Image 1 (tube, rainbow, N blue to C red):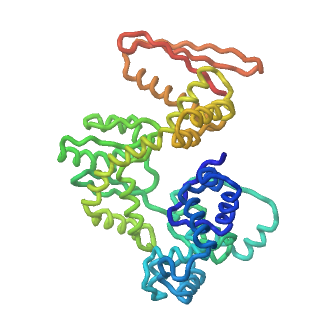
Image 2 (image 1 turned 90 degrees about the vertical axis):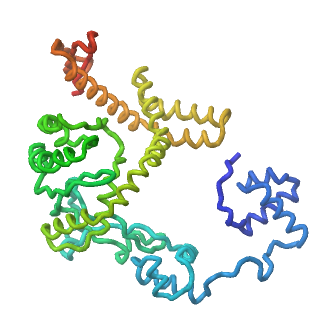
Image 3 (image 1 turned 135 degrees about the vertical axis):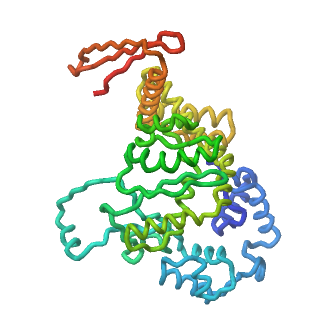
Length: 436
């Protein structure tokens, strides 16, 4: 039996659905059985049958319902504006057409004509020579991660099938681009000056240009603050840790979610940027914007941390279950595919027979594919290795290491390392295997 779909309260039954409901009712079906068959509520089926019995017809009476706020001519003007200028916003369409309706009404009129706001397809600016060369099918590709200025906020109005329409695409360069790296730190009542970092950020440059001249004096004037930073390599280098020994820092576990409020500050700055001519002008503009951000904006971000952490924990239940199942599979030495082929169907059966529909929806959100299980096991192994290294660095100087080498059945070399050290008064043994 199909599950009942969640429908909006304003969605009416179509003429085809009402005809099916009346036919099934005349065949002797109950309202509940018809509702489940058509994915409708029992009350909707009852009202449909009552209207048929009283009026002998399902057509709406003239003048019933709220009249439309726009005329047909205004609807055509709205659609014509969206098609002629697909990058226009709802406010622009409202102002140009002169319609006295809300932006939500304009959005509904566009949706009725199958026009929805979508992110445009990004394409390379090609010259005729490039287009000709692309027809010669000798394909090559390189990939590099870049800090791209494209924020993907622009939207265009388009119909289905217009995904690759040349008039609805955005040109986007994929080659290396000049940019500016900016460092900054915020607190509830103050902030540090922004620092423009030329070139690549190294650990020594991080200490010489940021920590000693900016961060340490700021912390000395604001005692009691706990300093937090991510696990980027310049932040975790030994020279950085030695410089921060006098500061109280917040431990940051590996692969932690990006919940720092300063991420939203970078977004605010990106939205306020104006078109820039060169790197120097961009750097000056960023420094000005950093100083102009109101302090109450930062306070609001701090106050939202409780809600965002709670939402992150709620959304992370499926991820936690995925890691626990991956750990169970690794300990039992089972195939990774068993999670998706056996465990997930079994969980669905249990949730469907003994629990509620909400439990069924939560179970279906658990990622248990074979590749996902492999990534989970890899993540946990890296985390265990990091914990062992941290315990080893914090332990005493009494330690021993032993190496052994052998070959497996495929005649591949296998290297085993046994690390033994004293941790909190106990002798701890840890085993490391070389992957390849």
